[in-house]
Amino acid sequence: MYKTILLHIGRPPTWRRGMRAAADLAKEHEAHLIGLASTGYAVLQNSAAGAGAFGLYPPIGYDQFRSEARQRLQEYEQAAAGYAFGSVESRVIDDAAEYALALQSRYCDLVLVAGGATTEASPLLPGRLAGYLALHATRPVLQVATRAEPRLDGTVVIGWNGGAEASRATAAALPLLRRAARVQIAVFNPDQGPHLHGDEPGADVARYLARHCSNVAVINENTSADPGEALLDLARSSGAGLIVAGAYGHSRFREWILGSTTACLLDQDEVAVLMTH
Image (cartoon, rainbow, N blue to C red; front, side, top):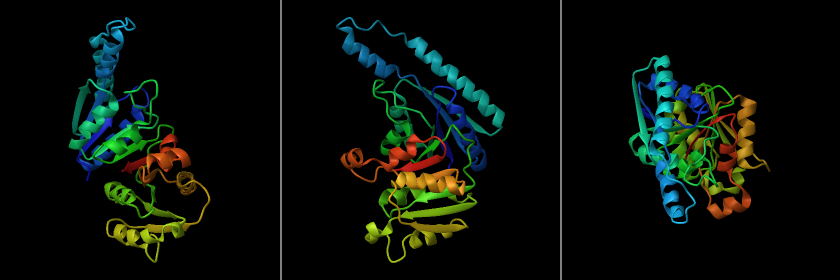
């Protein structure tokens, strides 16, 4: 069970979708929910220190950043009170969101962020917050879609390629899989990696999951589509509200050249995604 859940309280209103999913999970698991708001002040201060010698930046007011973060947390606390579950905590950290969440992930079971959330350390070149955390956090990362209602207890699609990343993600998702109405294990193009699948692609992981949850099915499919797009198509056609997948299973160079399944899944904002590396 997830007993400590860490929720990113980013810029409104996107964090509110994450709030609903986090509150539902916290209520079901009787978990402690931590809302974390980052000021980003440390990053801006470091940038200003370097540029200040050239007179490019005026002094940065610390109180303004803290006040804005506190305001977000007050809204979070009010929202949490409306869901009527037990244990709630607020934290403000003076760092970029990705650094703060990665550090605090050591002391929780699940990190939850809203779709569309970006990193803050490089404001000119922001990246996907969930993607950064999938690599650097020590716990699974759940990105909740903001364009649809959270549906984590319906159909779940698992992207299975036999790799270590997929195995870790599947194990990390067990608290969600146990409550799912249906679990679909998607194995695309199994002939391309037969040494990872055995004689019956998907059968071993299906037997493993059947001991934890009911209604598990394996879908073997040959496709020329990108694996990420294939997973999204399957999720849409089956009405799934959650995709479970390993993150960054290939080298960064290969993903830069050929495209990344991870980026494909995190760029969309229709289906929740749980990932680990």
